[in-house]
Amino acid sequence: MKYLMLIPLTLLITSCGKQSKTKLYKVEESALTKSVNQKSLPQDPNLTLDKSIVNNSYPIEIALYEDNRFYYNLPNLGDGKGTWKLNNGVIELKAKRTLFDMYIEVQGSDEASQNLTIQFIDRFGPNTLKMMNVNI
Image (cartoon, rainbow, N blue to C red; front, side):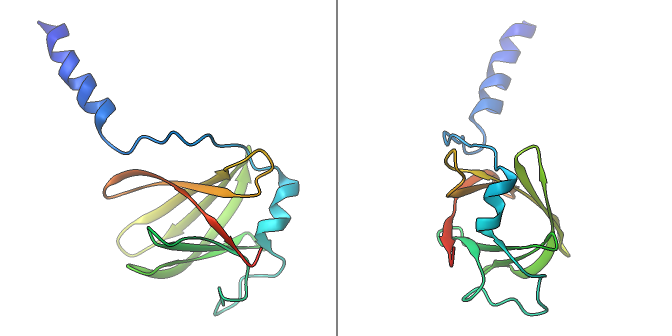
């Protein structure tokens, strides 16, 4: 009887959330210079001029700066600032918002990390978004 109850539970757990089939790659430190703005995070970042990664469908914009800080804009929720670090080939972004803490992982969409993909969990579950390079 125990085993019969495990089958539906297993199906429920494996079917919830968006399953990503995207192959992700570690970001090498040498590849960061392409995506990181070579200046400190300004008081009022200008994403029309600064290097950023964007996904217009979600929508989200992220700009990394050399002082290990980042700026983000979520047109549906507002903007903010946080910190980032490279940890074992994954760029980890962290920021505190009024309603929730933000944690995003950035990895390469290709071996050379010419394009990046972000992964995070929002109120709808896990998300994996391919990002578009802007001013890079």
